[in-house]
Amino acid sequence: MTSLYSFVTGPLAWIAFGIFIIGSVYRLVSMYALAKAKDGSSLAYMSWFYGLRSILAWMVPFKSQGWKSDPLMTVTTFVFHIAFLLVAVFLNAHVVLWDMNFGISIPSLPTAFGDIVSFVAIAGCAVFAYRRLSLPHVKGVTRCQDWFALILVILPFITGVLAYHQIGPVLLMTILHVLSAELLIALIPFTRLSHALFVLFTRAYMGSEFGGVRHANDW
Image 1: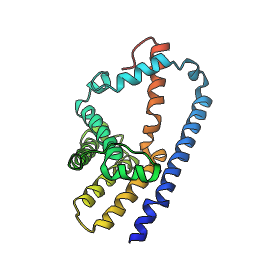
Image 2 (image 1 turned 90 degrees about the vertical axis):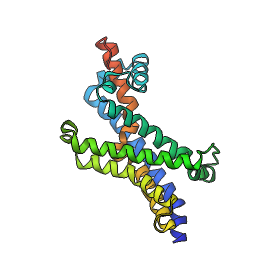
Image 3 (image 1 turned 135 degrees about the vertical axis):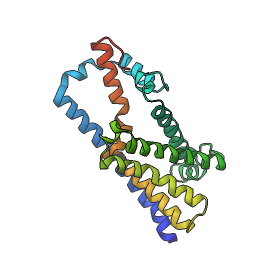
């Protein structure tokens, strides 16, 4: 079991990051080529000003009409993504890995606070699942790949909490936590989670079209 742990935290981790980087580059290049082939003229009116205006507007909770229309989704989205970043980057165990693998030294969250943030992220995933099950306009467009993406996201948090609280075999839970995190990282470019790669470009495109062409706000 110890040798398996060494493998998943060593070579397999580098493989996961490699798949993520190569896959991300491939998706970005292929989507650019597709956009250029389908509507090359759209690239001509891409505007730094209107693009950044749109991006910044959507980064502020309840500033845009889209955020105002669904308060529960707005709060959950912002809280979840903040919790996700805090845990992924600043959790004490993760900070150690950043230092060991990349030589990057960053401050870490207090252990108890990191545990709370993990539960907040799990609660956010539960709200996302609730919306897909209960709201007709969301349920109607939910597909298997949406559930798969949600499972990919929540598994590292659940296994991490189980490992931290020593529920079940600790080493096994730790290995499952690392494996689920690596699966998440590797599959980001190829699942619904690829919105993490495209969201800034999509928002900049919409902002440029509405602001530069239609002379209106896109929110």
